[in-house]
Amino acid sequence: MTEQKHSINWVTFLLAWVAGYCDTATFVSGDSIFSAHVTGNFIVFAAQVSSGNTSAAAWIKLITFPVFVIAVMVGGWLAEKSPKKYRILLVEGLILLVCGLAAFLLPLLTTWEDKLVTYVIVMATVLGMGLQNAFGKLFAKETHGPTTMMTGNVTQAALDLGNIIRKGISGNESLSGLQKQTVTIGGFLAGCIIGALLSRWVGLSAMMLPGVAIIVCYLQGQKSEG
Image 1 (tube, one colour):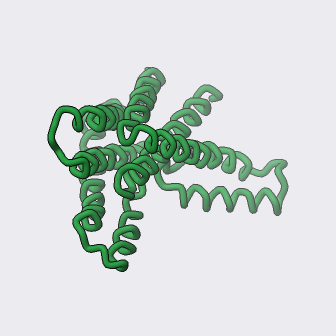
Image 2 (cartoon, one colour):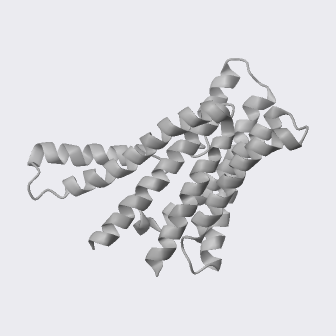
Image 3 (cartoon, one colour):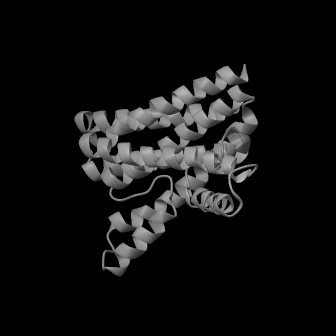
């Protein structure tokens, strides 16, 4: 039981870390586009349009939504076709790894404009995040909760904290819930910080790191499945 709890903590923290990393990296180095919280792009788009920016750079943010939807549908299909539930994460990891390599190599090997390279890599990252969201929904027991969207986790953590303050720690199940949410939120925050720093330093080629991390998570999952 302890080993299973450790595994869930590990998977939860790592997936949340990857989501925070990717979301921040694409926002910092990908023309202010969110790759995990894709609905946040609606806000960025509306803010840009309201300020008079009606360029393609503003409208392209809306493309993240259908890309995300397609990715989730593909995740559902992969779950049906493969008996190994962590296969979705393998595909996600490979996508993110290729994103990082492409960000590094495409400017050297092609004459594509920097903006085009950026948008291709960002949309591919959105695909990866869509697969991670599908994994979280289809295999909810593998993590402590959603690993890409933190509002619900923060809400639950606040409710658990309130229960602890009112009723005390002893015999309070809310303590366990708060610990679980701390793993998720802490992982996401750590990912945001590291993603911001590395993407500002090396651009979107920083996507190689979460790609490797997800592949490690897949291998860990395969091991636990036996």
